[in-house]
Image (cartoon, rainbow, N blue to C red; front, side, top):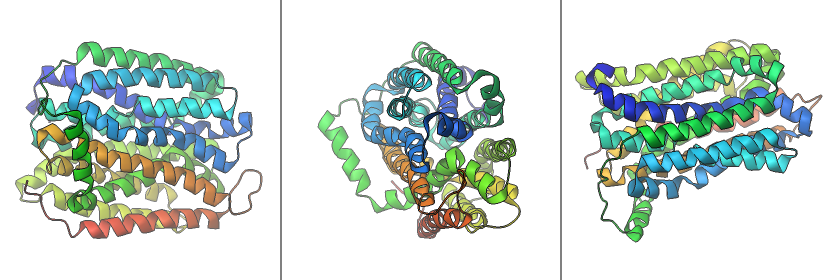
Length: 407
């Protein structure tokens, strides 16, 4: 793919956004490894831990619709750079927090600050690259994010021991500010399509997007599969591996590293796969449909408590769930170029609102069963994960009724 894209454009457009997106994923999943430290230092209940960690998703989700308007109006460079400065402030607050309120505020600021990570990138890609390259570029961007996920597993475990989680977040604050400077000073400006639209027209278009059945049919599998993956990989898979499968903290971190690595490999491969299949007459929609069915199939053994093969199912779930990002390409094909920011963020607000609900909700459900020394019951995990599986399956089946878009 890289050989077919202008090298200079890849450097000045792709790379700065990739730096911010790497940090976005690192922030998203780091709490899974430091969860026990937070519970110990602040005396958190499972619902508190779920709410704290999911504050990232809530702030992220609440800003998505305004973000879409801002991206279409002011462009991705200025929006992403300003927001990364907020992420730096949030990481600083988190690292210095003395109570749950300050922890939650810092986590929410981080979520707000990185909310333009992928959406800003997609908007930039629609401005600088041919639309048919969007899946490949998005896959490479997700791969960079997956490196952030990998970094937030076993490497964090190695760093937290000698340095502590507070020092880790102070370092992240500095890196976030550096990423903001990189985006602002390296990414070039480009004239935005639809610049004559009024604020009222831009906002009204969001309602029209949400009124489209084809938007919901394509967005639903993306939202439910990725929300499940983010909520579980980002927090609940680690205690599930310990409580249900008896893994140590270090072994659970290694399992999460393996699933994150599978997600990365799938991200890199997806663009090449969709382009190769397109040459054989297989559309991206068909690949999306097949991928979402495979994702559901790989999650079912996890949801319903398979006694063995936890590592295999985690890896397969992570690998197949990456097919969901094809939805971003399909969604941008529903609208003109001037509206790509809004259609992308319209799906993202649903994705991160659901991630918040899933991450918090799993904790709340686990708390309904008696726990012992911080360990939750296997039947509690089956109940919580089973609900996620049912939602994913329903969306994947509905997607089978979709037809290739003709704008």
